[in-house]
Image 1 (cartoon, rainbow, N blue to C red):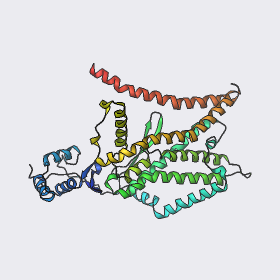
Image 2: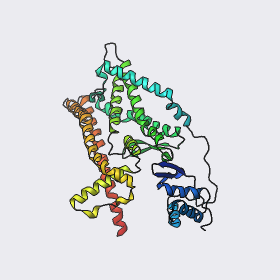
Image 3: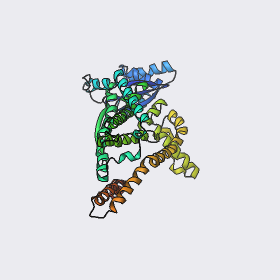
Length: 397
């Protein structure tokens, strides 16, 4: 059948230096091919039968190619169509694409910059507006603080992810925003399907859109706090709530700088370095380095599963993983620990009032919520780690 053309799904070809990222956008399946391999695939997608394409490759590059093995790889990637039914072109109008263009239009960026500039002027004029751990406690009730912060953040997190989604829709991608959970916590997730099908320069905005949203949200909250002051200059309840949420936005923004995790900035960093799986490659190389030092070579993983470029960058990127842990500890010490200390002190003060005082029960319930927030996820994680082992044991027996 080497003289019969092979039917392919619609594929994208994006040059990345000496390599080409080839992908099937509808299935979100991608492969990094050398330039000559991508050229061979292009010939076959144009209807050239495999045997003729192999001869073309040998004439062009001066060496033979194992076309059968190449086709087998393309089948495994899902690039080859297995059905004779015609493909849907998907040329229909993409929902929210117009909104994405408006949100990231030049006029919108001017507005965002103006809002941020006004917020900076307000903070410089009154340092009390500057983010502080004490802003979390917008009321004396720990129970109200805990519930307010927990549920009040959800719309802001949703907005962060929505900006990612709209940035993708602006490029014509079928990016999707979904709602999920991690143990007891509600999380929003953005899926950037097809992002690797666009040139690298266009990928930065979808990655950075969430952080841009955080900056604008922070600025708006600061301006609301400043604009709703009481006649004596103190912050109103609305202003204190705005400052509390502004602090949580700052903490989430700082969290993005932990490059050892797959944060928004990590993807920006990996894209700028033209790496396709920097996190896994650098982590594996670092672990291999440690195992070699300990003489435990049986634990080494095969480094050839990553591209040569990813391995080269990963060798010096590995220490950033260790540095990232240090950054995480600094964020915890400077941002989280002061909140926890004040929380416990307030709860202890209320509990000293005795069971007949409302502050006693507010402190008890507040501490109970904190205990649940820390202990229950840990228990669920431990149970989840044990579950695969128990299933495997039952199957073997």
